[in-house]
Image (cartoon, rainbow, N blue to C red; front, top):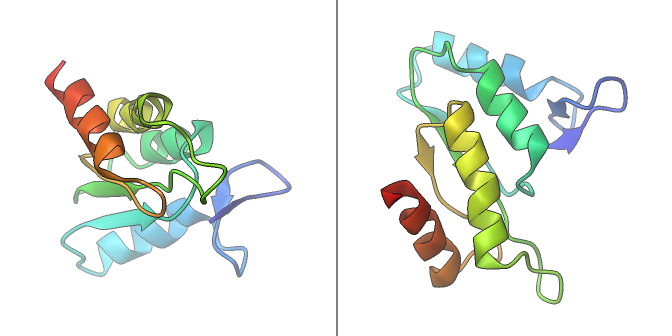
Length: 111
């Protein structure tokens, strides 16, 4: 997923808005929908907020970055927490997210 040049919303490589694609999957009977391997940030939280009305859980598994450019566990968890507060129901991590990142998410979830 990348930010749309026109409105900053997240889009698929073919230009389809991510929210539209996830709504279509839910309407087609998916048990859950989600996104992974994108950097956490305001775009992820905005996507979660726009999908609050989904009848199925939204899963977010953002990337912590690539070697040499990894986001530290605490800021990573803070961005994931923003997405959860905005409406994501399940959270995890993708590329670059290690045990420390997941532990930081778990700690915020307990708090």
